[in-house]
Image (spheres, rainbow, N blue to C red):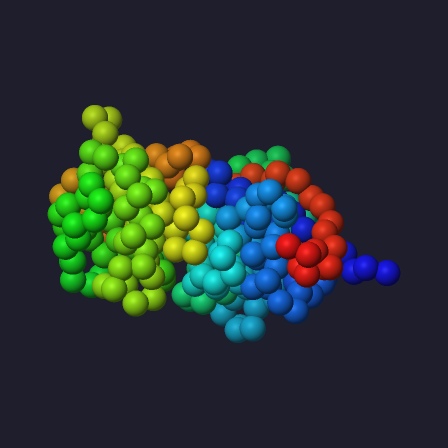
Length: 274
């Protein structure tokens, strides 16, 4: 009999992933699974694969691993972490409304905003941003300085009136020699109402509807360069995220929705047929 894996499709502002509860089942080759199942024509369709597991450290309640659509493992994902909070609470795996989540970029705290047993929004403590020197790029129709911000994964934020260059320029900058580990690239523009329109090229996945760490990096870069204050509304292709870079602890807090799409099963044999 062919082994089947149960999965849940979820998204945060359109940034969609396949979620697997690893406390109930196992996947021997998550890299291959991410590539095969993320395919939007031959697989389930997603920006990648997220594995929810037990924590291996006493400081956390649960753990996450995330694999991009190309099979590469990411450090963490803000949108995925919000979805994990909703999954854990609404599927009865915890009754906590404050969850500590182990990621490759440290333990993140999730604060669940619950009403009537439903997690409506999740605030994630994304910890402190880190910085490196600016670099200058001339690529495609982009020219000028960007700001490097690490939110546990690398981001390069370019403020421009032409955010739709995300496809033509983002693919080039992801693999630029200045970024030996590759990089997530944000193109952002401050709007008349103070919100920041942002489009993202994600390392390993390409253009995505939203990126939680990218929204945080954009808000931090905007505050650093005097374009906004420490609170921002980041408007991405799939929706809006609220970001606050607090002076009190220097941490970045991200708040946004998380949504179930559907549950299903897929045969492990599909890994060999893609």
